[in-house]
Length: 190
Image 1: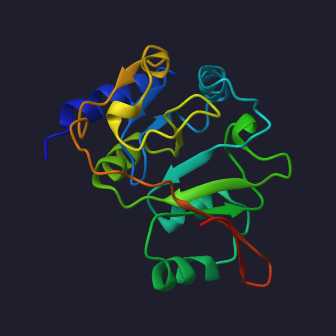
Image 2 (image 1 turned 45 degrees about the vertical axis):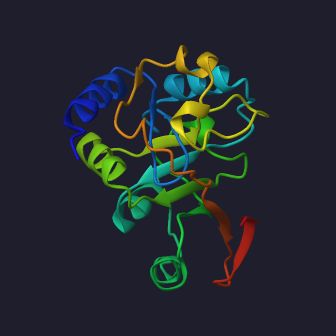
């Protein structure tokens, strides 16, 4: 799997405050530096979405969650390891160190520990979380494969990853859960 040139281009764009279209462990996403408020604002405008809707952030390790969430319940990691079979995004209370406009009004952040090889390489080398929101205009169908991404979205980003553009395996959005104080989960999106 040769995606080194894509990784290098993405790193350049992300470090400059740009936005990218990239394949994730779920659907194709639009991404930016999750600590850069101006870059996140560009994504909201591109998607024609209000910033009252928080965005998902991708990380690669439990320690990333610990760095960007104040006092997360560590039981969530056992739950993710032992009970989850598909990509699952967790809504955590107490987001810290992230762009204010990607955090929920209640201070929460939707974060997913990503196992996709491309994403893991990109995030580890970038050394910061990356926003991941579906590559579509709000209200339009999600881009399950690259060919589903509209021209309006493609022309609004600074770089489009070439890797996996020809993959026609239909992807699904992640499961979205809220982790409750008592160690239970509330499923927001199955």
